[in-house]
Structures are given as C-alpha cells and as structure tokens.
Amino acid sequence: ARCMVDFVTRDEADANRIREGTALIQNVTSGMNAVIGGHARCDASRDRFVFYYDIAYGSNKKICQTYHGRDNAIVIPFEEDYLPLLQKVSTTTSNREDGDWNPDSTNIFLMAFDSVIHKI
Image (cartoon, rainbow, N blue to C red; front, side, top):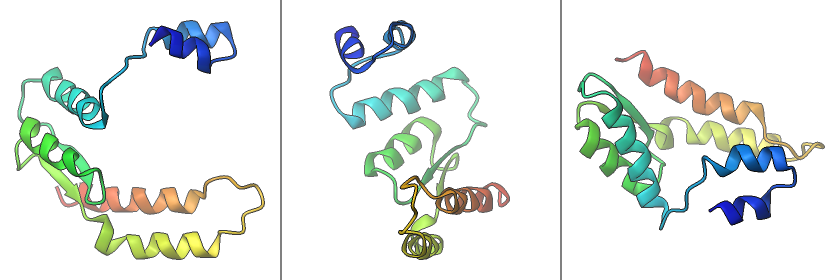
C-alpha cells in the first residue's frame, strides 16, 4: 500500500499524509463490509441509522441490514422517484464547456436523501 501511494502521488507531503491512511483490500464487498461494520461498532447503541440508495452496490443493502438491523437500515428510493430527474439534468447539461460535474445532479441526490430524513 505504501509503494502504491508513492507511485500515485507527486508531492512528498501528500504522500506522507496519504500513506498512513491507505489500505489494500481484496474487493469492494470486503471494503464496504469493513467501513459499514466499523460504523456499527463505533456505538453499540442500536439507535443509529444507516442510509443507502436503492441504486447502490447490491451487497451494501445486506451489509447495512446485517450490522444495523432491518429497521435502522433505511433505503433511499432513488430509482423510481429521482432517476428520471437525474436523466433530465444529464441530457440538458451534457454540453457543459468546462467538462466538470453538474451541481444540479448533486442536488438531486441530496433531495432524495432529504426526503427520507424528513420521514423519520
């Protein structure tokens, strides 16, 4: 992992900072298991919620429900309610001159998250 950091960074100050927080994992599922499981272990209380989008990587749902319970693993229904909005934004702004991401797209993901938060 440390050699990889040295390879992908140009600045030694960045390399020193990143080197300590880098770990190699076998695959995405084991990485997500480590992150979501670590989140669950930070507080033994079962009063914490974890949110995931219905368009997320399939194992995330199972991992969230395993560590946080079915009642505390909250799905954000993006595909049916918000994906059409995202598709409209991507087609109307595909000619952006700067080639950067579109803040309207981010706002759609935040709207979906916000709609679920207010229902709890």
